[in-house]
Length: 203
Image 1: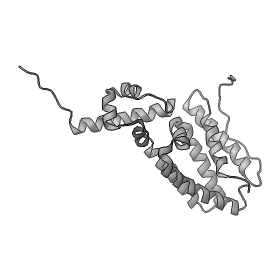
Image 2: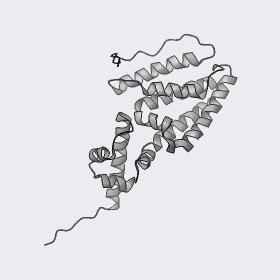
Image 3: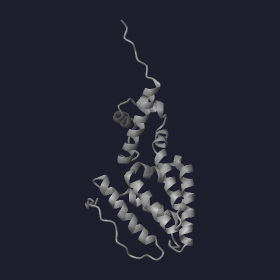
Image 4: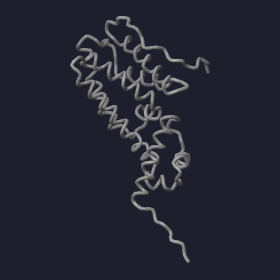
């Protein structure tokens, strides 16, 4: 008697796609963008061919994996731009963007470097430029601040080395507070968030 070969149905395909995306997001967040497709397939318990069937290129997988975080970043900037107080809006944006980036190493690198996010990134950057102009016009943000300074802050944030997600988040909050004091046109020393325990070995 010939055994019946079960063909994967639509629900199986949806389950596979969902699992692949979840694994990819976790892998890129923890290990950066260089995780091979074969490793993602292994962690998702599917074959590489299944990954490629849903995402023909690694770029397609990146785009799908980072769609939600990219939308979140746009939402954060839009909320900052809508704030009545331009400086408070600027602070909100820097603090929350740095927190998002601290929790997702892969997205931080994708947002600042990969070319296929250009259109979405440019829209967000245009909103940031408007927010920066508002904060300067209000006399709160130093006049020589440029958008690249915010990108530098995000790049520095991406370099935080910590033994846990909690420590990484705590370090990011403290770094954001330090950055905001340096960016203010008339800084007034205020207490910083608690320091995080970080490895102090110099490489």
